[in-house]
Picture 1 (spheres, one colour):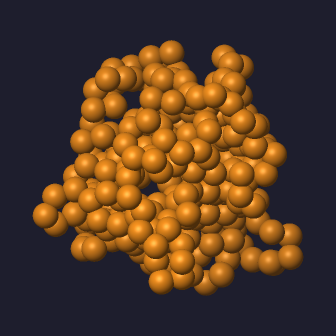
Picture 2: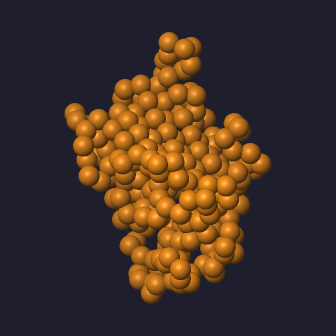
Length: 255
């Protein structure tokens, strides 16, 4: 494991990605994550000017889509820290949790909990100055329909004669750079995704948004061990937004 994620547990074995802060392609599906180890032997990596192995063109797209697909079907739990930095330098941090055991999946950060558990949608939040509450749970879209829509949306982003994003791979990470204006391009202007090669979970994600804000998620623990207790919806201040004590600034609003 790299310096980006520590105390990571090895185990056998990421939205339309569900759309909390970083979920890319659309809403209510599964998290993106990339498999590195499974792809390295199957695709051709090219040496860059700095000597680093670099995957480009169609090979990079194929590897990214294959890894994304594997992650959609994976079971894992990730603990980490999420930091949002605005263009004026203000920051907001939060503990971060994503737990996935298809079709169930849950994500917690910035005082919110979203996902689907037991065939019901989950939407809990903490309004400014308010109390953490969960809205009425609706019936979740069937998992296979979610999965198909997620992967179709991803393909529309990175494939074709005029894709939204150019994809390259380097040193176990994928970089997506937006080529043209697209209102729903939720990987932002540019994103870097780095992945755990054993469990298939995201260990680092960095997204540069229009307007100058940047989100960075760093995993601190990754495991394939998931239990029913991990889908707990009770309030937990661990996942409340925090402003660094030395900034003296007003907390930025969480979208």
